[in-house]
Image 1 (cartoon, rainbow, N blue to C red):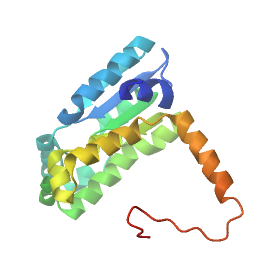
Image 2: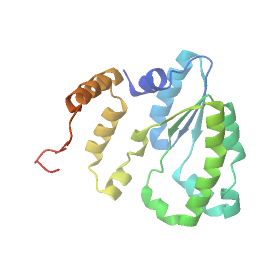
Image 3: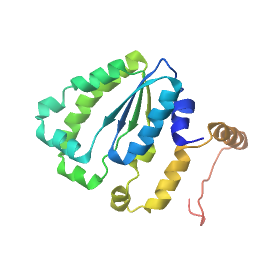
Image 4: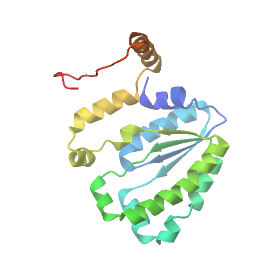
Length: 191
């Protein structure tokens, strides 16, 4: 099953009654389009809401801090009209975050929380964050990760067979039941 199909069919169980908002960055456009395609196949309405690094920097650095602390009218409207929200957004180059003050980041977080979360909870909007959207070459370089290995690992983790994962989890629970001490090691014997 493709990742887009897994997101739409297994994770969010989108139907023809859904209005889906996908928040994305250019590096996740292909996946967002695939998700939209899968949603359309179900009869759902979809909006792709694009962010860019330049847009994010302008938003964070040009709006007055008091404005950042307030919920965005557009964000509130999207949440008000969505039954499902998919978050595929992550700034492409994390070094740009150094250009945003901690005070502005906190103010934006306050405003975004007000815009999305209380209303999402009240309306029971289904929400999914796609961890794979964090994987970019500049981010891998910044964090000291091997880009190809990280991308492969995140893709596999994002597209796991949930029934197989549940089966493994059940077996692990049975093996660990009644244990007083558990020691976890990795290759090479480190704990």
